[in-house]
Amino acid sequence: MAPKIIALGSGKGGVGKTTVALNLGFAIASFNKKVLVVDTDVSLPNLDLYTGLEKPLLTLLEVLNGTADIQSATYTIQMGLHILPCGSSLQALQEVNIDKLGDVISKLKKSEFDIIILDVPAGLSRFSILPMTYSDEVLLIVNPDPASISDAQKVKAVAALAGIDVTGIIVNKYTKSVYGDLGVKLGLPVLGVIPTDDAIIKARDTKTPLIVLKPKSSSAKAILQIARKLCGIPEKKSFFERLLR
Ligand SMILES: Nc1ncnc2c1ncn2[C@@H]1O[C@H](COP(=O)(O)OP(=O)(O)OP(=O)(O)O)[C@@H](O)[C@H]1O
Ligand SMILES: [Mg+2]
Image 1 (tube, rainbow, N blue to C red):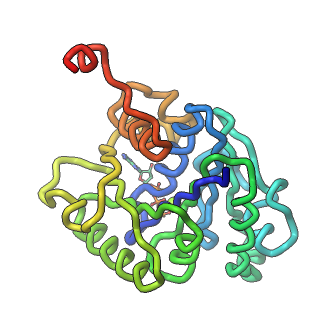
Image 2 (cartoon, rainbow, N blue to C red):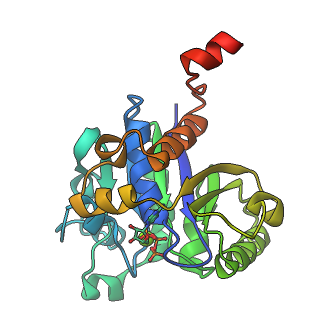
C-alpha cells in the first residue's frame, strides 16, 4: 500500500510543527510502522537540530538540486524513525528548485514507508502551500492565541483557493484559554490537544523522544492519542474504563 502523507502546516511560526512532526513520528514508529519525517521548510529548517543530526551533508536541498538521491539524504535515528532533513547551505538554497518537490514526493509515494509526515513552512507562500498539495491529510497546528488562530484561518482559506482541503487541526501549547473551542472557530475537526509542557522542552534539549523520556506526561499521552487516530488504531482503555463498559 502507498504511504499516507500527512502535512503539518500553520499560519503563524513557532507554534510547534517541527516538535509535533518529530514526536508524532516517534509515537507512530512505536506502533511498528515505518515512518519518515521530511523537513520541507527549505529556507529555515530545524528538524536536523531537534534530532541531533547537526549539519547533515546530504539533505532535501541536495535532493531537490539533483546532487543527491533520497536514500542518501535519509537518516535513521532513535526508535527506527527515518528523517529526511533539510540543510542550511546558503548556496544550495539559492539554487533550490522547489518545483522538484512534486517529483520527490511522487518517488516517496512508491516507497515502503507506512506514514510520511511533512513538516511544512509556516505561512501562506507557495513554499507552504506546495507541500500540502501532495498530501493525503493536511493538518494545521494552532496555539490558543489570537494571531495563531487568525493566521490559521487565512491558511485554510488560501489552501482552499488552491483546491486543498485542510482536514483538521492539532491544538498545541494549550493552557487554559479564553478562545473557546478552536475547532468550532476554524470549522475543522480537532485531532488532539497538546498542553504546554516542560517535558517537551526537556525532550528537545536532550534530543530524546518525548514518549521515551516522559511517557506518562500529559503531552506524551496527547501525542500518542493523535498518533493512534492517524493510524486508525483504537484508543487504549484502562482496566476501569473496560470494566465500566
Ligand atoms: N507543547 C509544548 N510545550 C512547550 N513547549 C513547546 C510545545 N510545543 C513546542 N514547544 C517549543 O516551542 C518552540 C517552537 O516549536 P517548533 O520549533 O516545533 O515550532 P515550529 O512551528 O516548527 O516553528 P517554525 O515555524 O519556526 O518552523 C520550541 O522551542 C519548542 O520546544
Ligand atoms: Mg519548524
